[in-house]
Length: 245
Image (tube, rainbow, N blue to C red; front, side):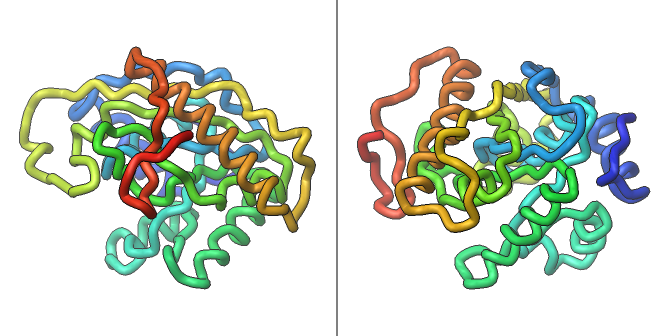
């Protein structure tokens, strides 16, 4: 199994359980674009968030590519004793969403990138609320990290993982359906943000443009997986309605 500077014994054991036991039993994996994941050095992986299982599928994909990701995840995970133990020893990064301390997660993620780690983030900040499952309007945390560090930003799209444990609503009963689900993960080439510069104090315009490019790349990959075209409208979670892209 691939190893890197970010692994710990607990993380390697968790990776083994996910990749060699859970994934083969629950899913049929279809991975594309592994060559776009840098073999070494810092990188920021930005992905769409479709369900409760997709972080395991994305982790499986990145470990298959030779990297051990450090994900930003909601701090609720750290309130569950067993999960807290696992997440801490796997060096994952808690996010206290919708609070002032949410910025702490970005600082920890930036430190990880500066140390040469690969960091995974869901720019939407939560599982998509789009009724059709498309990526929705994103927050600007991923853009802030990208502009502050200048590291490669690797877009990734996922499809199918929402059928394992449900989408927005956790559905454990799906695990008892013995049918394996097809899960698709596809990475694309780095998002070009070079003309926006590297800055720890970006303007609103820089953040908006970087976020647009990041989510545009993720959405194009997702359209490829779905075999369709990107819709003209995008779901706005703040308005709870569709708006023009």
